[in-house]
Image 1 (tube, protein in one colour):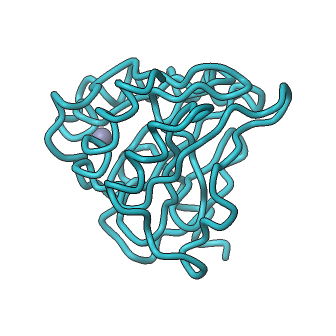
Image 2 (image 1 turned 180 degrees about the vertical axis):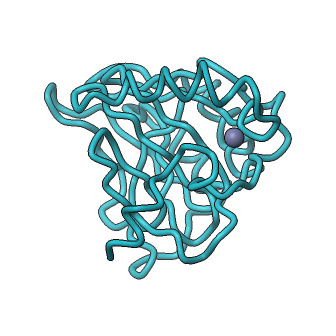
Length: 188
Ligand SMILES: [Zn+2]
């Protein structure tokens, strides 16, 4: 992410509903992502302002943006390639998504490890972080690298519905749209 494009991404992500953005720095090879700030948990800090984020973007070594999920309703379903998530993602993408108006509008991101992130707004406060076996639903106090970021494992990039063409991330119940597993919750 160049300095110019990083500055452009900040207002776009804020408009999408990611209320807590964190700058990432170039990390050592083998590390996943490295925040430029020491503390990022919702309970520990106030969110950075747009102006503060732009100042970070202007600094040397800033390589991307992460979002802290939790205070807002944006969630990310993470399909992990190394846990078989790409097959599950491809089934969802080719079978469910084309026939669903809401899911057709969800942003889809290729991660630095060739996994897939689907961004969505959750309709239900009860939904929390879930291990899906092939990935995770990430809802609260989780740091995720956002599309446009260079991380030590690779570039995160949109493969569908890149903003600003997207006005707001659609709100869905992920259990009804193949982005979470209802049984996981019932078992808890
Ligand atoms: Zn759907």
